Every structure is written in structure tokens, then in C-alpha cells.
Amino acid sequence: MKMAASKMLEALLAADAPKEQAQAAAAELGDLYVEVKSNTTRLNALIGLVIAQTVLVTGVLFQVAFRLP
Image (cartoon, rainbow, N blue to C red; front, side, top):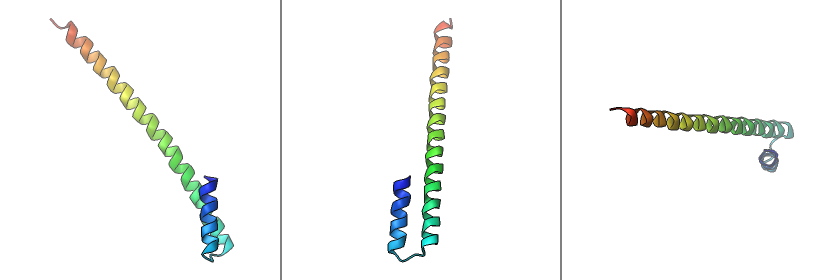
């Protein structure tokens, strides 16, 4: 996060952007990175729950199918 924001700050300063605006843009980039990382973690947890539920339901269906006459 800090590395991407610092690289963004360096690039903006090299492009002759005002220092305050460059710092604000780099801070926004860092915040965006944190939000994306958080959403990625939540999505991975959701995918894990869906897979676990699918396995559970499939196992129950097999149990029911094998016990039918």
C-alpha cells in the first residue's frame, strides 16, 4: 500500500503537479488499495462458504439417495 502510494506521489511530483494535490491523490490511492484488499478478503470468505455449503448439500443428497428403496 505505502509503496504504491509513494510511487504515485513520486510520479505526480515528477509531472510537476502541486505537492498538496499529489499528496492527496497518493493518499486516495492508498485508501482505495485498502478497500480493494478488504473486499477481496470478504469475497474469498464468501466463496469458501458457498463451496462448503455445496459440499454439504451434495453429501446430504447422496445420503438420501443411497437410503431410498
